[in-house]
Length: 189
Picture 1 (cartoon, helix red, strand yellow):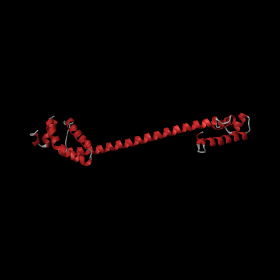
Picture 2 (cartoon, rainbow, N blue to C red):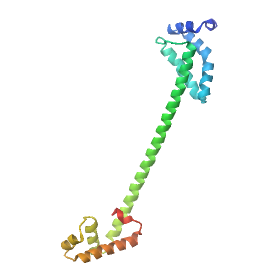
Picture 3 (cartoon, rainbow, N blue to C red):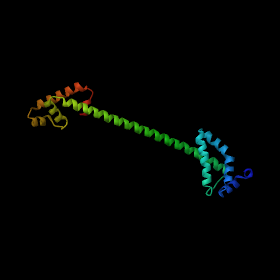
Picture 4 (cartoon, rainbow, N blue to C red):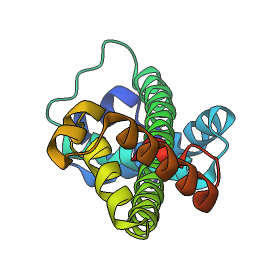
């Protein structure tokens, strides 16, 4: 490689395009250190910087036949490192945003499930307490709440006065509030 160290960048690029691995090694030896320093100033993560430099030289080798520089090799390498560092920041931002969104989604899902479980438990508790009401009161209350019947409709169907229906519903609500606490649990029913 001692011979290659005297070659100009343009000669090394020509040899690289021809498939000369030693030319790639010389380019690496010549620029790896300064490119690493250049990248590390902008992205102080050693492993990420090493990956960026390695990926750049792998890219040079795999795309050697298509390489075309509008400027010098050094300018191309510096620009490539800068762009890869910027891409790393963008990728990091996307990952961070995705992770945050995923966490929000998970948290929201947990809240929904917890709310649904809580509501189901409350419904079961209310149904248990309704089932414990005296039979006539329970029938009137269920017709009023479950079947959305008016007091007059319930009275007609059961052959009792609308005033009795009103009193039965009122007493049922009073009993349920006492047993369940007056904390809006009955709005679920």
